Length: 136
Image 1: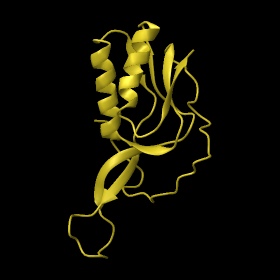
Image 2 (image 1 turned 180 degrees about the horizontal axis):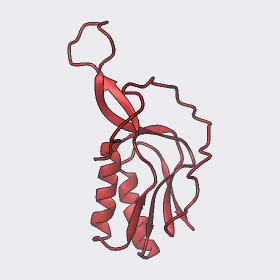
Image 3 (image 1 turned 45 degrees about the vertical axis):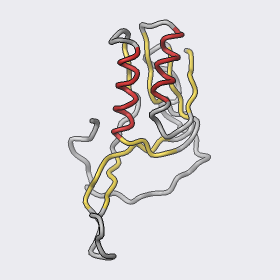
Protein backbone atom coordinates (compact mmCIF):
# COMPACT_ATOMS: atom_id res chain seq x y z
CA UNK A 1 0.00 0.00 0.00
CA UNK A 2 0.99 3.61 -0.47
CA UNK A 3 2.44 5.42 2.51
CA UNK A 4 5.18 8.01 2.96
CA UNK A 5 8.63 6.93 4.14
CA UNK A 6 8.89 9.95 6.38
CA UNK A 7 6.63 12.86 7.35
CA UNK A 8 7.62 16.20 8.86
CA UNK A 9 5.10 15.87 11.68
CA UNK A 10 3.92 12.49 12.92
CA UNK A 11 0.38 13.60 13.81
CA UNK A 12 -1.53 16.25 11.86
CA UNK A 13 -4.59 18.33 12.64
CA UNK A 14 -7.78 17.02 11.09
CA UNK A 15 -8.49 20.15 9.05
CA UNK A 16 -11.85 20.99 7.54
CA UNK A 17 -13.35 20.12 4.19
CA UNK A 18 -13.80 22.95 1.73
CA UNK A 19 -16.42 21.56 -0.61
CA UNK A 20 -16.30 24.46 -3.05
CA UNK A 21 -12.51 24.75 -3.28
CA UNK A 22 -11.57 23.49 -6.73
CA UNK A 23 -8.18 21.82 -7.17
CA UNK A 24 -5.61 24.22 -8.65
CA UNK A 25 -2.99 21.55 -9.35
CA UNK A 26 -3.29 18.19 -11.08
CA UNK A 27 -6.59 18.99 -12.78
CA UNK A 28 -5.71 18.04 -16.39
CA UNK A 29 -4.70 14.87 -18.21
CA UNK A 30 -0.90 15.19 -18.35
CA UNK A 31 0.62 11.73 -18.87
CA UNK A 32 -1.92 9.41 -20.52
CA UNK A 33 -4.76 9.75 -23.01
CA UNK A 34 -7.64 9.15 -20.59
CA UNK A 35 -8.19 10.19 -16.99
CA UNK A 36 -10.50 9.81 -14.01
CA UNK A 37 -11.40 13.18 -12.49
CA UNK A 38 -12.88 13.77 -9.04
CA UNK A 39 -16.16 15.70 -8.86
CA UNK A 40 -16.40 15.90 -5.07
CA UNK A 41 -14.23 16.31 -2.00
CA UNK A 42 -13.32 13.46 0.33
CA UNK A 43 -10.47 11.67 2.03
CA UNK A 44 -9.24 8.81 -0.15
CA UNK A 45 -7.37 6.17 1.85
CA UNK A 46 -4.32 4.25 0.68
CA UNK A 47 -6.41 1.05 0.69
CA UNK A 48 -9.01 2.57 -1.64
CA UNK A 49 -6.32 3.77 -4.07
CA UNK A 50 -4.73 0.31 -4.09
CA UNK A 51 -8.10 -1.43 -4.61
CA UNK A 52 -8.91 0.87 -7.54
CA UNK A 53 -5.46 0.32 -9.06
CA UNK A 54 -5.84 -3.45 -8.81
CA UNK A 55 -9.28 -3.36 -10.43
CA UNK A 56 -7.95 -1.31 -13.36
CA UNK A 57 -4.82 -3.45 -13.82
CA UNK A 58 -6.83 -6.66 -13.72
CA UNK A 59 -9.31 -5.39 -16.32
CA UNK A 60 -6.69 -4.21 -18.83
CA UNK A 61 -4.81 -7.52 -18.24
CA UNK A 62 -1.53 -5.70 -17.55
CA UNK A 63 -1.78 -3.90 -20.90
CA UNK A 64 -1.20 -0.19 -21.29
CA UNK A 65 0.26 2.14 -18.67
CA UNK A 66 -1.50 3.43 -15.56
CA UNK A 67 -0.50 6.55 -13.60
CA UNK A 68 -1.66 7.24 -10.04
CA UNK A 69 -1.82 11.03 -9.77
CA UNK A 70 -2.51 11.20 -6.02
CA UNK A 71 -0.50 10.10 -2.98
CA UNK A 72 -1.79 9.59 0.59
CA UNK A 73 0.51 11.64 2.82
CA UNK A 74 -1.88 12.82 5.56
CA UNK A 75 -1.69 10.65 8.71
CA UNK A 76 -4.99 9.80 10.43
CA UNK A 77 -4.89 8.78 14.09
CA UNK A 78 -7.22 6.45 15.94
CA UNK A 79 -7.49 5.46 19.56
CA UNK A 80 -7.91 1.87 20.68
CA UNK A 81 -11.35 0.35 21.18
CA UNK A 82 -13.05 1.09 24.52
CA UNK A 83 -10.45 3.68 25.51
CA UNK A 84 -11.67 6.33 27.99
CA UNK A 85 -11.79 10.00 27.03
CA UNK A 86 -8.59 12.00 27.46
CA UNK A 87 -5.08 10.49 27.63
CA UNK A 88 -3.92 12.33 24.51
CA UNK A 89 -4.17 11.74 20.79
CA UNK A 90 -4.22 8.21 19.37
CA UNK A 91 -1.53 6.49 17.32
CA UNK A 92 -1.27 6.87 13.53
CA UNK A 93 -3.62 4.32 11.97
CA UNK A 94 -3.54 4.99 8.22
CA UNK A 95 -2.80 7.62 5.56
CA UNK A 96 -5.23 9.52 3.34
CA UNK A 97 -5.22 11.96 0.42
CA UNK A 98 -7.43 15.03 0.82
CA UNK A 99 -9.11 15.08 -2.62
CA UNK A 100 -10.77 18.22 -3.99
CA UNK A 101 -13.17 18.58 -6.92
CA UNK A 102 -11.41 18.70 -10.29
CA UNK A 103 -8.41 16.62 -9.22
CA UNK A 104 -7.16 13.97 -11.68
CA UNK A 105 -6.93 10.68 -9.76
CA UNK A 106 -5.81 8.14 -12.39
CA UNK A 107 -4.58 8.27 -15.98
CA UNK A 108 -4.24 5.47 -18.51
CA UNK A 109 -2.67 5.10 -21.95
CA UNK A 110 -1.95 2.34 -24.46
CA UNK A 111 -5.49 0.89 -24.53
CA UNK A 112 -8.65 1.67 -26.52
CA UNK A 113 -11.18 4.18 -25.24
CA UNK A 114 -13.83 1.52 -24.46
CA UNK A 115 -11.34 -0.54 -22.41
CA UNK A 116 -10.09 2.58 -20.62
CA UNK A 117 -13.66 3.72 -19.83
CA UNK A 118 -14.63 0.33 -18.38
CA UNK A 119 -11.40 0.09 -16.35
CA UNK A 120 -11.98 3.59 -14.94
CA UNK A 121 -15.60 2.69 -14.10
CA UNK A 122 -14.41 -0.34 -12.12
CA UNK A 123 -11.88 1.86 -10.31
CA UNK A 124 -14.51 4.54 -9.60
CA UNK A 125 -16.66 1.99 -7.74
CA UNK A 126 -13.83 1.58 -5.22
CA UNK A 127 -13.52 5.32 -4.48
CA UNK A 128 -15.61 7.45 -2.06
CA UNK A 129 -16.05 10.37 -4.50
CA UNK A 130 -18.09 10.87 -7.66
CA UNK A 131 -15.86 10.84 -10.71
CA UNK A 132 -15.89 11.62 -14.41
CA UNK A 133 -14.10 9.95 -17.34
CA UNK A 134 -11.95 12.47 -19.26
CA UNK A 135 -10.51 12.14 -22.77
CA UNK A 136 -7.43 14.22 -23.63
